[in-house]
View 1 (cartoon, rainbow, N blue to C red):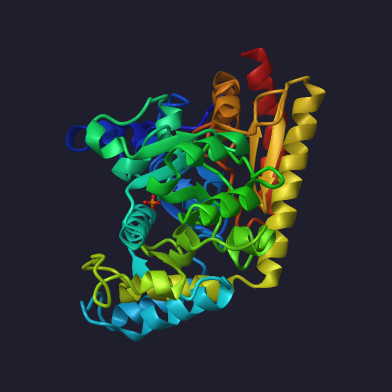
View 2: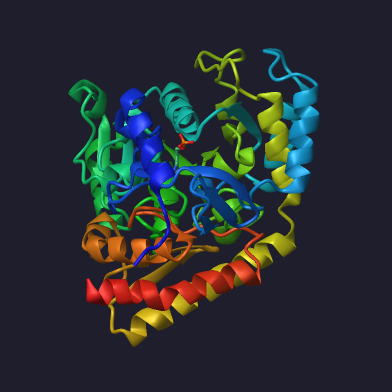
Length: 436
Ligand code: PMP
C-alpha cells in the first residue's frame, strides 16, 4: 500500500547494524514485533516527526511518554538553551535540581523527599535497594506484565520489549539474583495474599506500575491498589508505586492524583521518569522522609550518579512540568478520546474484535474481544492483527508504538489537524487488518 520511500532509513539501519546490536539502542525500536524497516527520525516539532527520507508522521509514541507538550516546545527549548549556555554538568549541587525536586514534592502529596537519577531503570533499581536496606529483608514482589526497566531482579515476566519478543525472562540474570523475586498475576488479590502468607516476613517490598502500561494499558481493578496497601502494611513490607510512565501524565500528580489514597494509606515510595525529564535523561525516586533518610550520605544505603540532577536535563524537566497546566491535561483527554473513539468505530464497522483500555489519557487498543485484566489476557490478543494495523497506519503517516504491548501517547500539541490525520488513516489500516 505504501508509496513512501524508506531507502534512507534502510541504509542507516544497515550502517547501524554493523556497529550496534540489531541496529538500535533499545530493542522495541527495531520493529521486530511488527516487521519492516524502523524509521530513522531526523526531526520533530509539535505532534509531527519527519524521517530521513522526508516522510512526515503524526507521532503517537511521544518518545514513549516524555513529550507531553509536543516536540521542541518553545518554552522547553528556551529553558534548555539557557541552561546549556551556563555549562553542561558540574558534578556539584546546582539550583535546578532543587527546583525540580520541589516541584515533584509539591505535586505528589505523599512524596516528602526525592533523589534525582538519570533513567527510570535507575529509579526502580535504587528504590528496590532502599526498600531492602530499610526493611532488612530480601524478597520483592512484582507482577507479570509490569515493566520496571531492565533491573536484573525485575526482568522476570516483564512487559514492554520483553513481552514484544516473547522472552520468558532475560539471559544473563543469575538464578541467585532472580530467586528473591516473586512474580504474581496482576489484579489477583488471593494470589497476593497467598504469597504473603507464605513469605510475609521475608518480603521487603511490592513494586507495581501505578497503572500498568507495559502490557498495554491495564488499570488496577476496583480494590486492587487498596489490597496492595493493606497487605504490605500488615506484613511490614513497603509499597513502591512505579509512576515512571503515569507520573505527571495521567494528571498533575500522576496516577496517584487520579486514584488518591486507597484503603488505609498511600504508597511508601514512588518512582518517576519520562515526563519529569521533558525528553532529557532525568528520573527520580522518592517518598517518606524516614525511608529516604536511609540513603547516603545520611544513611547506609548507597546510591549515586555522575550526571544525576544534570542542570540541562533538570531545566527541561522543570519547564515541562511547569507547562503541564490544566489546559494541557484537557487537550490530552480530548485528543486521546477522539482518536480512540474513531478507532473503535472503524474496527466495529469491520467486525474486528477489540477493546480499548484507559489510564487517564493513556490508552491501548487490544485486538481481543474481552477486557484485559492481566498479562495472560494481554498475551491472548491478536498481535499479528496489530502488526497489520500498525503498518496500515504507518503507510498513511501515523506512527504508533511498534508493539501491541504498549500505550498510545498523545501530546498537548496534538491539534485538530493531527487528530484528523490519524482519524483519516483508520479506514485504510482497518482494511489492512481484515484483508490480511
Ligand atoms: N518503569 C516503567 C513503568 C516504565 O514504563 C519504564 C520505561 N518504559 C521504566 C520503568 C524504565 O525507564 P527507563 O527506560 O527510563 O530506564
